[in-house]
Structure formats: structure tokens, C-alpha cells
Amino acid sequence: MTVTAVPRDLGADRKRLAEAAARADRLIAALPPPSRRTAQQRAEAAAAHDAARRLRAGFLNAYADRVYDELTEDRTRFLRIDELAEAAAYAFPGLAPTAQQLARERSRPQADQEGLEIDQGILLRAVLRSPRSGRHLMEAMLRPTPRALRLLAEFRRTGVLQTEAVRLERHEQVAELTLCRDDCLNAEDEQQVDDMETAVDLALLDPAVRIGLVRGGVMSHPRYRGRRVFSAGINLKAISAGRISLTGFLLRRELGYLHKLVRGLSDDDPQRWTPPVEKPWVAAVDTFAIGGGCQLLLVFDHVLAASDAYLSLPAAREGIVPGAGNLRLGRIAGARLSRQVILAGRRIAAAEPDARLLVDEVVPPEEMDEAVRRCLARLSGDAVVANRRMINVAEEPLDALRVYLAEFALEQALRIHAGDVIDKVGRFAERSA
Image 1 (cartoon, rainbow, N blue to C red):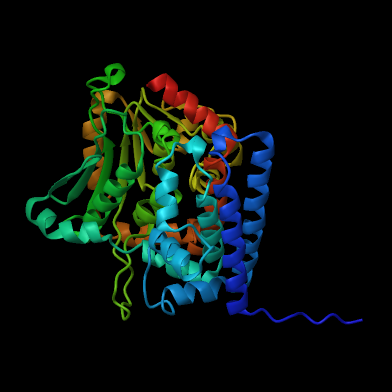
Image 2: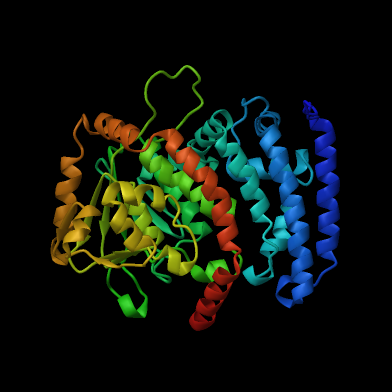
């Protein structure tokens, strides 16, 4: 007997999803906050979430490209990930949380959040899985931010931008980005991501800039007072407080300024036949690069480290996925070292031989300034941009990153709301209070 498939109907499925999501929302709203639920109530909430998420995933399996085309007017509008997720919430009720729902969610500590960003992860995974829609979304994220465009004229005039997390200075043809969150050892949060993307955009947009440098600033933290520090990684206190979001930090960071460091900027010129604007980048690591700081090094053209510095990427210990570090670290340093660093939390001192798989030069701390100057001069040649572009095309094809980030979108949303992560960041916040 032949079974004939029943044709899918977008309008009917859209209505069915909205009704089912509304029922789940009503059931969950009647329960106490997550941290005060009984075992039975937790099971009820989990079942309601699971049923709604199965419908969302099935809906997107059938209609991801049609959803994206509707939201972007047949890909004539370039929406960033946060804009896309918000537009989806209103155009397709129940598909993703609304701005109001997210505002309520983010007003609570992580332990009392429902994990609504998991629904955004389901949406963004489906979009990024599609070669057509996913590439368009990645192009949207490679465009300069409105903030950078507003600041461009002033930066070109003065050569200086001071933000909360980053100081950008143009010296001759070098854009120097100094990470300056000295109160938290340059730990990353949403403000830092916003400031970094703005600074990277400006460095790429300014025709007077030929090459970029990223280095940690001098700290006022008691333990490292007077020393430069590159980065302590993601701000665990911000996670515990519910201030690290999927679209504002976790995915924006990967698809925004980190991807711009690799591939440069996209623009509005549909007739452009020349390659996008990109520039070589150098990182200088003083003291340490932990977690997200270590991830950041994987996209640079040249990395210098002081001989007393160390690198670590303790993702499994923290309970989260280290961005695109899993994609890049194995390619750069090899599969075995990648597993030792990510899964087992191995710390690598800059002075040990394996560090040369991650950094290009190791010099005594007192020689860092001169080593940076020499490196910037070497990488300022006319053919550097063309060759680094071709290296990146070979090493990290666009679709390889797209497919990876599709799975990351949901995996990281699940991990950031997992019980073990909530417990770990909660204990860290208590110790740091």
C-alpha cells in the first residue's frame, strides 16, 4: 500500500504553532519560578517546553527559507541576528520569544530563567543550516554597525575612540585596539562585544588604516596592578546575573567582530566585483589569554606572547562551548592538543614548545613593545591582504563556518541554561561578591 504524503500548508501550520506555543506559555506561567519548582513542576515545565520546541523545529524543517524570505522581503533587507529573531517573534507568533518576553527573562538571574533563548537557537540553527538563507544572514552580520557608521567621521578626524571596554587609536597606518576593562581583567560581556565590533568596523572603514593591533591594557586589579592583561574570557558574573544573551553576545561575537577580523566588511554595493575590505591583524598577549581571549587569538594573522604569559581554553570545565574555538583550534594546533586544551582544561605556558602551535613569537616581557613594532612593519606589505584572504578561503571556507555556527546556535543556548552551568556561575558570583 502506498502512503501519500499530506502537503504542508504554511498558513495552517503557522496557526497551529501559535496556538500550541500559547498553551505552553500559559501552563508555564502558572508555575513558580524555576528555582522554586518541585520535581513534578519541573517535569511539567520540561514537557511543555519540549512539545512546543518539537513543533518549532518541525515547522522550521519545512519552512526555514520561506520564513527567512518573508522576514527579509525576499532577502532584500539585511537583518542582524537580534533583529531577525525579534521580527520572527511577531511575524510568526510562537516561533521565537518576543522582546517583552526576553526583557522579563533577562531581568531575572540565570537560575530563574526559562531558557527562552533556546527557541531563538532553534530558529537560528535552521536559518544557518540553509546555504541560501544562512549565507545571506552571515553577509548581514559582516556589514558595519550603525554605531560605527555614526562615529566614522569623528574617528577619521581625530584618530581616537574611547569606549567603556576598548580604546581605539590610529598611529600612522596602525589601528591600535586596547582592551581596557581594568576592573575585570578584560572579561567579556555584551558591552565589550559591542565596543569591539565598533572598533573593528572603524579600523576596517578608515582608509588611513593599513593594519590592526589588539592588546590588553594596563590593569588596576590588585593582583595584576600595573601589568597588561589580554583577557580573562567570558564574564561569569554576567552569566549568573542573566546578562549574557545568545543574540547579544554568544552569536553576535562569532558572526560579528570575530568574523570581520577574518573576512572584513560587506557593503551595500550590489555591483561590487572587487573583494571586500579587509586588513591584517596582530595580537599581543601579555600575562594571559583565557577562554574567549584564547579563542580570539585563533583568527589573527600573527600572535606575539610574552614569555611569562599563558593560554587556556577551559570550556568543558566552565560548561559552555568556546565559540568557534572547536572549529579552529584543531586545525591550527592539531586534534590531540585541541582535546587536551578544550576537554581537559590544559594550560599552555608561552615558554613551552607546544605554545608555538598557537603563537608565532615568544619574547621576554620587556621586549614586547619592540617585537610588536617589528611585526606590524613586516605585515604592512602590499600583497599581505591578498594572500591572507586566500589563506582564509582555503583554511576556513564560508560554508564550513556556517554549518558549524548553525549547530553552535542551539548547542550554546542549551549549555548556557543547563543546570551545571547555572550552579558553577552562581558559585563564582558568590565568591566574587
